Amino acid sequence: DPRVKGWLLLENYTPTFIFSVLYLLIVWLGPKYMRNKQPFSCRGILVIYNLGLTLLSLYMFYELVTGVLEGGYNFFCQDTHSGGEADMKIIRVLWWYYFSKLIEFMDTFFFILRKNNHQITVLHVYHHATMLNIWWFVMNWVPCGHSYFGATLNSFIHVLMYSYYGLSAVPAMRPYLWWKKYITQGQLIQFVLTIFQTSCGVVWPCAFPQGWLYFQIFYMISLIILFTNFYIQ
Image: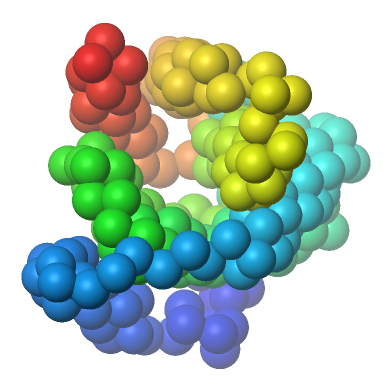
């Protein structure tokens, strides 16, 4: 998409690929390096990191919702060129969404440093490693239009998730964090709603590329399977 030409990290896929390979290497080697070392607390930086991501997610959620309303987006199917200036607003926010997936690699690195290796599940690594790469392609080919929906829901879920993680790093706050049990439920609902909204674009097509819609449906199904397995356990 010429509208993102020259944007940071979008000009070339190589940096995104390298970041992903480095991420997987750290996932593999990090626990080995930490095996005979004391875990790091990271409490202070965890509070800052998680609350920072909470604010970023809140910003993205707000901007996406207002952008969609300003552009008069069609819930059932929205192409990538009819929203006028609202499309550019969505594109700018979705760049931050893409970039946030790089920042979120730190989730795993904190698990490694704190020796919480049980949290580095197949689901966790799959989700983190794939999202950055998928969104590089989204940003280069379909950076607005129907792409907004999953990112909007995910930003809202991340407000809940990262606020919980940030506050739970403060022991005195833990008794008050009542929404923990709803986070995974919310994620599953998010995937189902995204499949529904994506399917609308298949049933009532517009100029949004159909291949992306099918890919998103299959990707969401893979996440539902993995998250359901995690939730049951």
